[in-house]
Picture 1: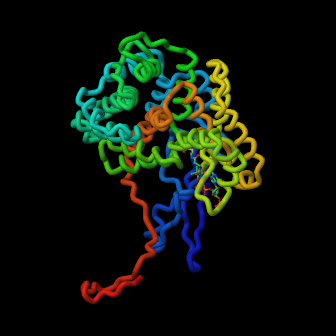
Picture 2: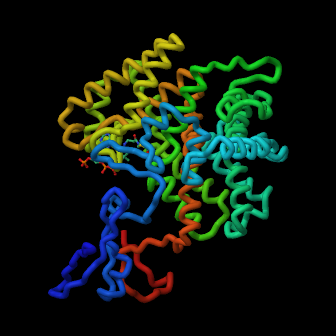
Picture 3: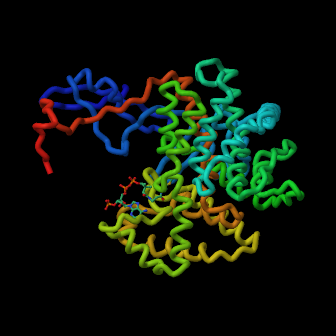
Amino acid sequence: MAEKVILKIKKKEYELPVVVGSEKEKGIDISKLRGATGGYTTLDYGFKNTGSTTSGITFLNGEQGILRYRGYPIEQLAGKSSFLEVAYLLIYGELPTKAEFESFKNEITKHTLVHEDIRKFLDAYPERTHPMGQLSSMIGSLAAFYPESLDPNRGEDEVNRTIIRLLAKMPTLVSWIHKRHMGHPVIYPNNSLSYVENFMRMFFGFPTEEYDMDPVIVSAMEKLLILHADHEQNCSTATVRIVGSSHAPLYAAISAGISALWGPLHGGANQAVIEMLNQIHHGEGDVNHWVDKAKSKEDPFRLMGFGHRVYKNFDPRANIIKKACDDILKKLKIDDPLLEIAKQLEEVALKDEYFIKRNLYPNVDFYSGIIYKAISFPTEMFTVLFALGRLPGWIAQWKEMMTDKQPIGRPRQVYTGENERKYTAISKRKSKK
Ligand code: ACO
């Protein structure tokens, strides 16, 4: 028999249906609560325990540290797959056959160029613009070049063309943003290379010389991008869904997702971690000083790269990244003092009562920054790399929402402001201060 939940309000009982997921997760369906109870809503700041959707894309169990894309464990995908294959899996639901993958890859390579006018936009930014702001605007601006994409209900082929364009142009845009920051000429895509190789060449290469592709770095990048590719209903993905739910263009929804990712409590943490480790390295207090600072209720500082809304045991991505981080530093023969500090910080924090009690563990951003640094990415580009990885997840979640014909996202509130009062003329107003 289907499970039901009884809610009792002032002696009256209301029966609420329970939706059971494929991994036996249970959600109490409160969508009819307001009408049935004459006005009751639910209140959950920060949506800490509110399911906004059912979804068949990513399964995550924070207590047991499980993460699967379309049923495949992240450990297997990160160890065996390529980023482009994972992108296909997330967006279309199944791992591609060889023929499907070839056709997908070919489609993408046809669209890697961006309109030359986009370069004019890039040239106009002040030198110190943060690349996340630039990326968000550039992606939003793509809609201007493809007006037929403005209607997200224009049919499967048109939607698919937008999806392909986004995947194809993102590495070019990210690399060009970096090149303009450096004052260097941009590098055009080379479609004979793989997705990640092409990106590395456009980012680090020069028009005057051959780019020396390092397979160790390419493989680390594939892994990092796969680990970031989706994470169910996080802040940026929820943003993509809510913007998309108004039937705004897909470019606009992705642009909004990039903005949400920018903040240091979300994707921006990877940049913040390196800045924090650098401060420690340059003598602004030892590890214990920063742990104490993070514990102090008077100090707004938090240990960057620690804690997670859903992982309360360990972040499986952090486990994979920690190992990849050790491997790549060894292979590249890099002796990074920041890694040593990161390890000390982790050791001190994991033994500390404050962190133990609150289940605060290193998250994916704690180690990813060290790998990016080892590969020589500039710190302010770290969150942009996260966005490059998260793109297929945002697209998959948007596509699922549109296919399921979900309603516009519109949360309720409990109003706590003034009750009705009368307007008074400015000459008669008294200051309340
Ligand atoms: N350092 C110190 N204390 C922390 C930290 C931290 N990094 N994270 C959480 N806490 C404390 C809080 O102060 C709170 O303490 P209290 O119960 O005494 O008030 C308790 O732990 C619970 O924290 P919340 O803020 O309620 O947890 P929430 O789920 O809302 O926040 C978040 C999760 C934003 C990730 C938080 O842990 C944080 O700010 N971490 C640092 C930033 C970071 O690494 N973000 C990346 C997350 S991963 C990602 O988005 C890709």
